[in-house]
Length: 536
Image 1 (cartoon, rainbow, N blue to C red):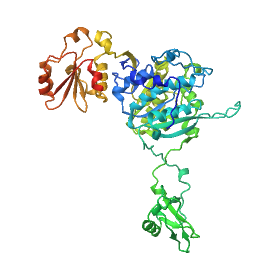
Image 2 (cartoon, helix red, strand yellow):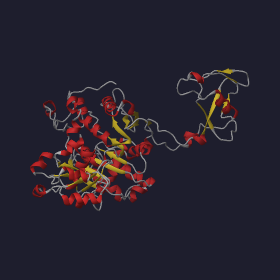
Image 3 (cartoon, rainbow, N blue to C red):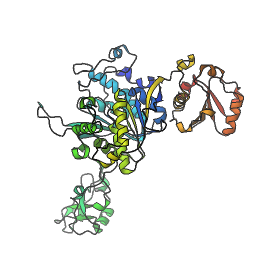
Image 4 (tube, rainbow, N blue to C red):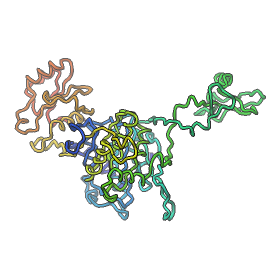
């Protein structure tokens, strides 16, 4: 497989491993829920690389559909490379706006995207799929990176979306009227949802021979792969010998003759061809096309701006997000790629269209899809989250009845806090909350998703992994930590609770002998030193 090379790649290839886990701090005032929770719909304000890493303990392998609309790197967007990678070359790039005349702008864009795509892949479920919108500036680089990260055989399709409702009359060469959305799956063999058939789709099915099974369409009789044993001749009633297609027939001669007798396969009027009937009654739906050109069905850029303006009538257009996507476009992705209870992630959330589309889809089909949005810019509350608040509560002036009434639902607003730093814990400063260290410890040590509902802080219980019942003796208080240890009382208590199961206990110290631990099926791991060793 061809490999994409760009300046900085050797430094950032594994940068996602070095990004520290950060605390996720709930903001109840900005949330639209009784009590903020990581099980809720989420809007996370902060750098999306750090936020994706912070989401791993709770959501690794659980996200069914990812949609992102990253900077297209046109040279006019004003984005800056901000990842603090420990490299002199990349340090020079920090916070410098990437313009069209920047000779390293494609390298910077690749360096920005590569670790984010790595983490997004970790968040995807085994049945998951990612859609990335882009244009001609970086489409070639994006596909090459994704083939490298996801695998060449995970490429699904490139969707061509007609993003402009009219052509540019001032264009010097071609009017660029489309965007591309590149689609990759976590594993090979991913299949789209089938779309409902329309009368137009069914119009070419007819019933010229009054077949009792109804309308049909001429189908393919060829074997999908070359098969020498399926190459034979069939003689028609008119005496013509009909040779097999180049790959051979689809079936053995015995089966094909049965289908001819049952009139599922018929001869043409001149007896020189065989025709397979594909019956309309057997067609359950249509695979989606890669050409999304119907602007009534998927919307367009101008439509997206009008939509946003109607949600924020009090704001000047210039104060709104400049390049929103239309809700219809994201809803079609949801139609193609999600079921009613799936988790949908957008880590370049912008104006919040993805959340809007998820809520609208749930309202229409009674679904319970959940969204996770990440936005690093200052408008995360005033635009991104505020849009979601308004569409949940309802837009009185909206023409759409569901939007006017409000889609209902809730979300929890989080912001990134301090990194969970082992050195700081050792020194007794910047101690993380019990909940934040719990999910970090559980995920890092076991490689499994942490389930917040299983947590029982009063018993120091984190949850069950494939191997252990996991406990963590910890308080975010340096004086208490110095006195805290796995002792006989705690060992006897958890032995009664889980007498037959293996138990893993994280604690600053242990007052029991090895034979005591062994007899009670307890493994002690010193906090915080052994988190990493267990992970290895």
